[in-house]
Length: 205
Image (tube, rainbow, N blue to C red; front, top):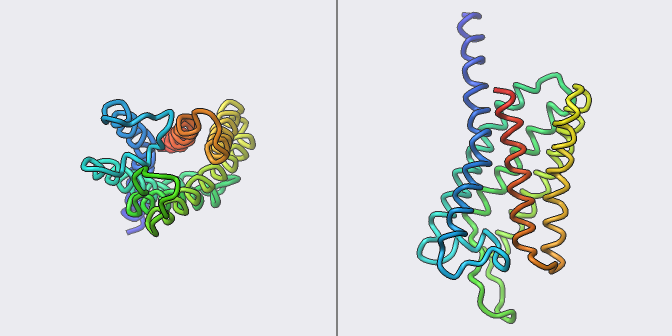
């Protein structure tokens, strides 16, 4: 019985971690493909969340939800892979929160761009809250993983973790303050952080 249980744990952890490894690239590829092909969409002016609106909005909604579910599931595998290491508790928790926020951002669709005077709907406000929650959790997870890698002597990955977290932090701040090409800068930061988390999962399968 003990041998069977041990084998089961060995199988479950890599499977769940693989889900997390796929989440970031999946969301990035689907988002970029839509941004490049959707009529009227301009990534230098429009956030990727705007792809959730219109007749093809279901594609991005599904992208948010599927990537979020993969992230939540994969966080459990990463928790087992990092057990006993610095950051082994908080990094997976933060990643799970980021995944939950991503799912919520998919369910709560932002408003189409109309006029600056138009009131914001409740679901658009919810989308912003969910996105903020997800971004902050991702940023924190990157910095926690930086400590994990630094303690392990993996300097390159520690630097990558700091760069990824800072890219998202700076991109979010730049976009929120109306900086030039804010949507593009935020997209680059978000994709960088998401793909770093996926890289971490891939290295711990």
